[in-house]
Image 1: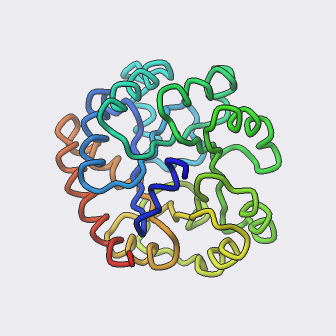
Image 2: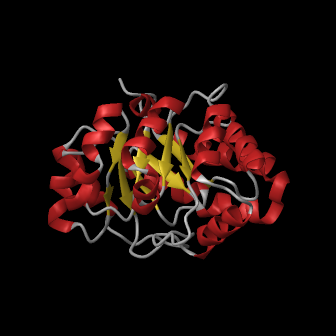
Amino acid sequence: MSNIAKAFANGKAFIPFITCGDPDLATTAAAVRAMAANGADLIELGIPFSDPTAEGPVIQGANIRALKAGTTTDKVFDFVREVRKDVSIPLVFMTYANVVFSYGAERFISTCAEIGIDGMILPDLPYEEKDEFLPICRKYGVDLISMIAPTSENRIAMIAKEAEGFLYIVSSLGVTGTRSEIRTDLASIVEVVCQNTKTPCAIGFGISTPEQAAKMAGIADGAIVGSAIIKLLEQYGKDAPEHIGAYVKSMKDAVREYTI
């Protein structure tokens, strides 16, 4: 069983996202530890990038703050080495193809394996171009996690059949950000996914409340939240980890009711 599979082995998973280096890496480390201690099953770590095309204004702001603070890919790698001393739950990077290309794909992915990163999500990588990275990911045992959007339509089955780690189902068209209501027919998407793979799927984009998380857990294998956590960082700064821990606990409690 891969480390990512373990995140889904005991019922519905709650998956928080955080941008590394916002406002600094010491705060990120404290937040990651708080999330892990309060029930996070897997954590997505964003490597800041100057043009995060999939992100709404909240996470774009986090990227800008992290870059202004001097966060680099090498510093993020060092940060992961440090938190891996006491955080054992699965960790995946969420970043952009250009970050990996500019660092050198083999160098980047081999370092992921060395420091304990279990998977990689590249939202700007088209399914048809994943072979740029997939052979290297398989060489080093790092799952290349695919995304399915409401526009994927007749490609859903194809993407699902080749999925690794977990499938990231995008709840809504557009960029990341909290939403008051999610209208996509997610149940139909998940049904097609389940017909074509045993790989677990989690729903993200727009989820911010325990009620939304519980609803998504009722449909899929897990719920992913990012912008709501970044808002806590924006509001509380270096004091945010305590608030993030309490928030993660409330969200995990919400998805737990669907765990059999």
